[in-house]
Amino acid sequence: MRWRDAAGGLLAAVVLLSPCACKDKATPEAKPVEVPVVKVIQRDTPITAERVGQLYGAQDTEIRARVAGFLQGMHFKEGSNVRKGDLLYTIDPSEQQAQVAHAEADLASAKTRHVKAVADVNRYRPLAEMKAVSQADLDAAVAEEGASQGQVEAAEASLRLSKISLGYTRITSPIDGLIGMTQAKVGDYVGQYPNPIVLNTVSNVSSVQARFAITERDYLDLMRKFGPPHEGGESRLHHDNIELLLADGSVYPHRGSLDFANRQIDPSTGTLQLQASFPNPDAVLRPGQYARVRVIIDVRKGALLVPQRAVQELQGQQMVTIVGADGAAATRTIQTGPRIGTLVVVDSGLQPDDRVVLAGAQKIRPGAKVVAREVSAEEAAPGTAPGAGAPKPPATAPPASH
Figure 1 (cartoon, rainbow, N blue to C red):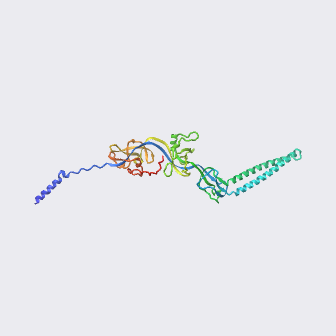
Figure 2 (spheres, rainbow, N blue to C red; figure 1 turned 45 degrees about the vertical axis):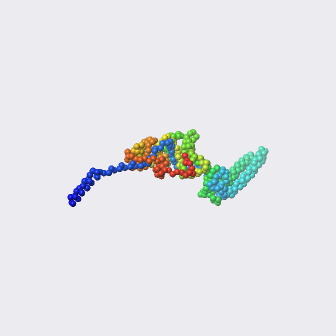
Figure 3 (cartoon, one colour; figure 1 turned 90 degrees about the vertical axis):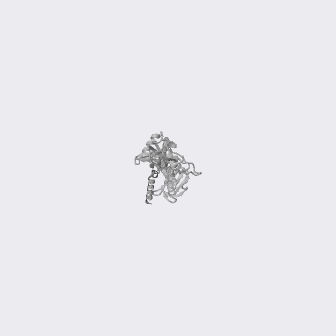
């Protein structure tokens, strides 16, 4: 029995060690990695410079108390539109009325003295001809007449000044515009420091002015592109070259034009202040708002663009990974230009038909086969998962601004 058991074990060992039994199973090839890719975008692209600016009315006029006194009345609604000449405030006129009365009395007295002086001259002149009075008496009478005439004129000027001061107790709007919140209420003593002298401000907001600063380099670029202003100060920046981006990210529907540049560069900041005017027919814009001013300084015809997130930087070089027609990945060194939103302009290194890997390029070896899944530029934007698709706007959504 033992030799049979030994023979069986030997047979089993031979079977286990046979070439058929010890042959390794073939290892399956690794599946190609699936990566999202986006086609290089080719289109005419405006090159812009954006700066933060502050808005002002076309005319912002301060309403001041030009005489001191107690505020007696407020004759407008705050935040409403007022017309030129509308009564806004009244100041207690008692003091000014007293000054007018005093000036009128002084004028009457001066006129009386002048009448007497004229009568004296008329009486002394024939007597002096008859040698009944001395020539010195006549000269004194003539001098008194001239002095009294000057006193009358001075009294008349004083009366006019008193009446002007009395008129200042009625404060009217100097322009048509939007009036703001009052700085003083009825009963306040105004017109003298430290109490309010500037009572309010009226702004003409039919158009607004955006004031912003640019660097010396930006200024030189603009001068090379558009040249100096025409004779008379008119800019060569056309009306459709300046846009306004509001605080909510929307683009203001009306474009503006550059109408002012300061005479010098600010030495403390190295910037130049510019001013652009924008129409404001719906009074949407208000003085004091902050907005971004976007100046179109150039338009690149047929520019190539790729998503910024597809560009990698290594040792100071900008690179992207592309997928060829055969599915093989390759690394390209590119030269980039300005950023346009989530895209970047590619100056060199890519062709219009290239497909650029959007994400996961660092995990792909050059020459490796991949499965390219194309996504649109909208899907490639940050915050949208590739392949998920951009959400559809509601049916009632307003058209996008251009």
